[in-house]
Structures are given as structure tokens and as C-alpha cells.
Length: 184
Image (cartoon, rainbow, N blue to C red):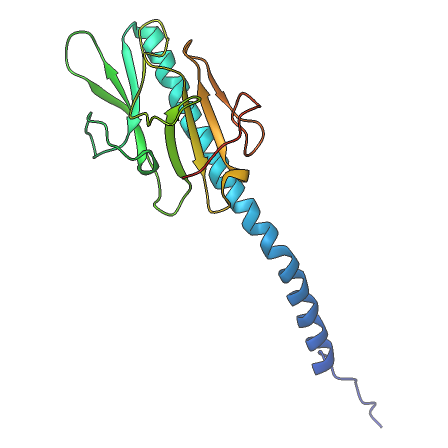
């Protein structure tokens, strides 16, 4: 006589229990993933802008010529735009000859927003120019990156008159560590 083998597989009850556990884990994990993604986007934006500003200052010092970082306007154009959230360009401006774009960064319309103002003021800044000695040609500039979470999670870059570029280490606070950020 043959023995009957037990059937292999899951029962309906076991399957339902596993699905409930997976749903509970996802319910707790998804908000954390959203925060992680938003933090990565805003940090990526500030890192990219910091790198462009540092590159522009180094180019100005290396070549003893003005280099400008300004909002992106159109492909291959050396003309500055008005909206920092569209991206930015780095433009070499030799004392003789024509200007040339050396770096272009465009941003997604769904990403964080970016604004530039004079530090300690509300005057909008449309371009940041480093002279041949690496000094800023304007007053100190505060660049603020914001997302849907508002000013408490905003990040900033502060450019001093000496040309020194500094990022904020604490969300919601300017790079000087004392000034609270505001978002548009």
C-alpha cells in the first residue's frame, strides 16, 4: 500500500498573514523613503551648485579673468536668465574677446526651488561674478534651496565678499549658523 504524501504550498491563512505583515512594514517605511528622497534631492542641488561656484572661483583665479555664475536661460547662451530654479551657467568673461559658457546645469521643474538674495537683505541677485583675484564683485550672496517641506528643511550656500563659498550644515539655517532661512 502506498503512503500519501502531504501536499506542499501555502494555505490561504498563511498567505493573508504574510500580506498583512508586508503591508504594515510598507506603511511605516514609505514616509521614511519619501524623506530620504527629498533630502537627497535638496542636498544634491546644493552640492552641485557649490561645486559650480567653487569651479567658477578657481577659473577666475587661474586665468585672472572674471567668471560669472547666473541663472540658465537657453542652450549655449552666455546671456543670464532670471530663474535660478531652471538651473545655472558658468560663463568666462575675458577682458578681451567673447564670453564663453564653461559649464551648464539644468534643473527639473519638479525639484527643489532655488533663490539668490543679498545676505541679510531681500534684494534678488541675478548673477554672481568672481573677479580675477577670486573676490566677489557684489555684496555677499545667500542662495537658498527649498522643497515642499518649507524653510525648516531648506539648505543654503553663502558666498562671502572674499569669494569663500560655504554650505549650511544644519537644515533651516544659513551657512553662518545663526540666520534662519525663508522660502518663497
